[in-house]
Amino acid sequence: FTPQTLVGRRILVTAGGTRERLDPVRFLTNDSSGKMGYAVATAAREAGAEVTLITAPTKLAAPASVTVVPIQSTTDLSQAVLARFPQADALVMAAAVADFQPEVTADQKIKKTTGNDEFILKLKKTPDILKQVAAIKQPHQVTVGFAAETQNLLANGQKKLASKSLDLLAANDVSRSDIGFNGDDNQVTFILPDGVTDQTPKTSKTVIARALVDRVAQLLADK
Ligand code: PMT
Image 1 (spheres, rainbow, N blue to C red):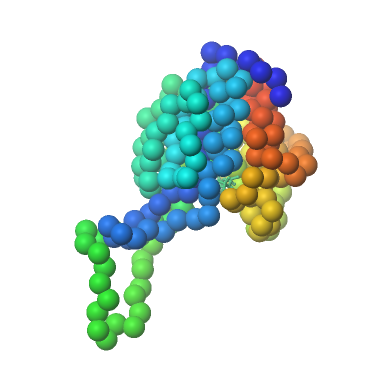
Image 2: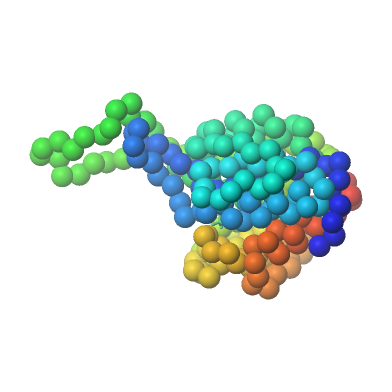
């Protein structure tokens, strides 16, 4: 890890699991703790970048000297990213973004009714934020995604990298309980647009984040 490689760069990082509201007291979400994204924000700051961390609710303390933008839903996240991306040199999307959201959010708490033994919830697709970003991306900007996979890590990762026009993708196997969601460790396979892949050892999210930040610095330097 090389300190100060990102001095003068603005890095946007997303973290945590988005919350899709059913009603005022209930939401759909996932197991993301935010640790991976917070580690990336911290590493980017250590490398000298001006960092904005857009975060879904987590139990984590805000990293020092980082601008924190709290969001809840995928729609909020999309608006926050699209508003800030034009001023950023790089975006790292570590957030675990819901793929579907309730078609309707009830204004009042949904009640049980007598005679209703089931409740059918209709979901609609959320916006794909990295695809929205790809549409406005400028040649000097770097975009990095993660891929949370339970099978075919490489093939699915490669598809996501191409469909979201990314410069780098970190694929992690979220079927394992010792890496991926929640824990302090991770193991990722970095995938580049030319097909080159590089698997890290299983190590702390801090070390993975520093390796990712080194790659972002190199990609920016190469642009
Ligand atoms: O938070 P932790 O507990 O530390 O866990 C870390 C992590 C497992 C959440 C993290 O390492 C990770 O894999 N983050 C990405 C999770 C995810 O949403 O993966 P995906 O394969 O569904 O999406 C691929 C990429 O597209 C991601 O960069 C995602 O942020 C982005 N995306 C997804 C859906 C959507 N509607 N818009 C997006 O931009």
